[in-house]
Length: 82
Image (cartoon, rainbow, N blue to C red; front, side, top):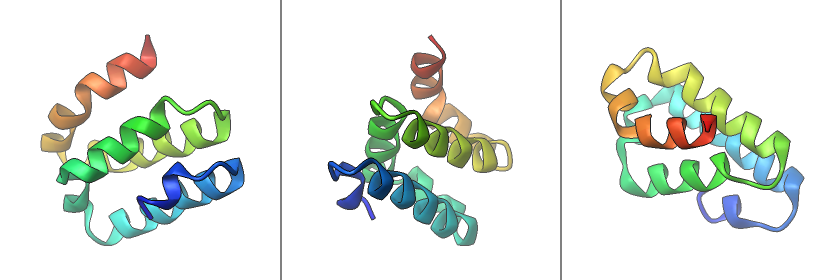
């Protein structure tokens, strides 16, 4: 999934984020991995609105139920908000 997040096609990147969201639904601790953090960060800054929305939705679903993830993703979320 992480490799697909770098694809050129917007639809592929969006679907990859949604697939990642499904994986995280089974195991939210996967968001603590550094490679996952880099992948999500890259998609938070994506040129495509739909990819960015999928990344924000992913974090919104899981950061609130795992407060320790909020600390790890805080800088990314602030950067996206600004």
